[in-house]
Length: 200
Ligand SMILES: [Zn+2]
Image 1 (spheres, rainbow, N blue to C red):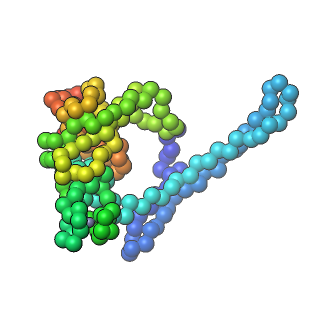
Image 2: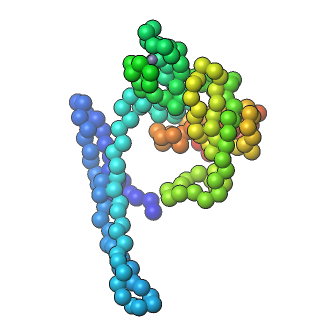
Image 3: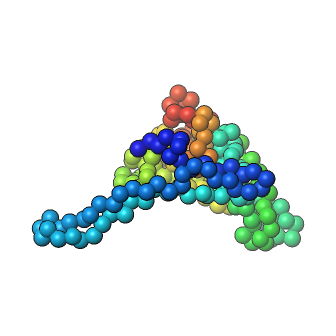
């Protein structure tokens, strides 16, 4: 069901304040649930159509960069921290060891050169609201030793195999500003094989 603009909620920030406009809660009639064997009422459905406002805060730079074809991570640069120099992908706003604010850094090149499949799982039955093609090839992405975490993502082209080299692709044409703007493909995949709207 595609909504028209007058049925959607929009948010801008003006003078440092959130300014919602439009519709954020759409009422819909509920339905009774009858027991077909006894003819008796058993309950009701509760349709809910609401728009949630999700603030990204310090992670906004990560999601904004995906649409520009850049993979951002964060690094602890605190001299007094035992784990100084550790890079976090997924992006962490704060270093988990010293709790200082980490520095956003661009790891696009590192990802293109060093990303491999650490492990994977193929999902044939998805949850609600799934938009990924089934079967979904979920992959755990490993980078070089400077990146101390593993990134969960999706392999869009190719068959997953542990240790295989992969490269990131980005939804640069019409970004959604969500994690759906980032996927991976096997190294050697050609531009013409990429999903609609994606580039290297
Ligand atoms: Zn630290």
